[in-house]
Length: 336
Ligand code: NCD
Image (cartoon, rainbow, N blue to C red):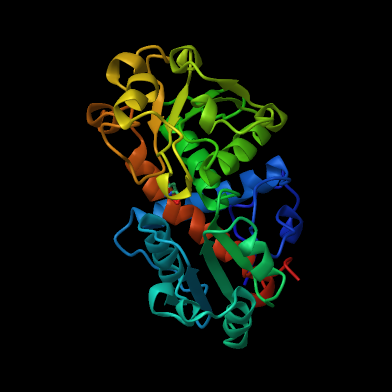
């Protein structure tokens, strides 16, 4: 098999030097060209996904295990579709019916998955750091599909790809550098926020994070973002507005007075959106709580909301990650 024709040696090194990692656990610490490489690789899968024959056989004969210890709709479905569209055998481990419920430790589960000779393992887990723990124990590439409030790397990548793709559609070049991106909501508990911050700041965007004081992590400035508690001020001149759900399942105690009060201060309404740039993009990783962090008429706003495009880009970026991370095992030229 030859190197993909989409490889752009003017922006990143050739072969495995473009992405010299076995796993994808976090976006923190990745170089700009590593992020761009995965995003550029995903473009061919966007095209394939829009065609009537959505199939490429490059992962034929490979086994991918999706082990989701936490609920998921779009991430699980999209990893499953991604593996299948590349021709792999994909199995989903249903945690509700698994031995985890019988008290098996995470390490024992990891060793069991390893003994099945998977070629890639995709893991979602409620504990920050659990995915790295499993990655340290198994012999194949591990992809993090969200671990606690740590990171959700494929979400960060798909969001950057969505911004680039939406700007290109509008004939605006697609450069992420220099954009003002507002991420508003439950920053404290959000792995999506963390991965997006790493991805977008590495690509040169100016990131503003906005949350009520109780939902803003202390020391967030160290992530090269500007914190805001006033949503109206944060929106001023924004190119992209990314809304996040209140992650009630990760909250112990009362973090906000009431959903009504929260909407009043931090909900994205049409009126509020007018403070951003006239063509600002609206994003949400899902699942949305309509009428709380985002109004329906904003979530469905034609030409502005790119929430469905995020889902589309999700499949493409996951195909790119599965393809790239299995290249070494498949003996692809330049990936030894
Ligand atoms: C996010 C997650 O699970 O971290 N959703 C997703 O992956 N699309 C965000 C959330 O649950 O609110």
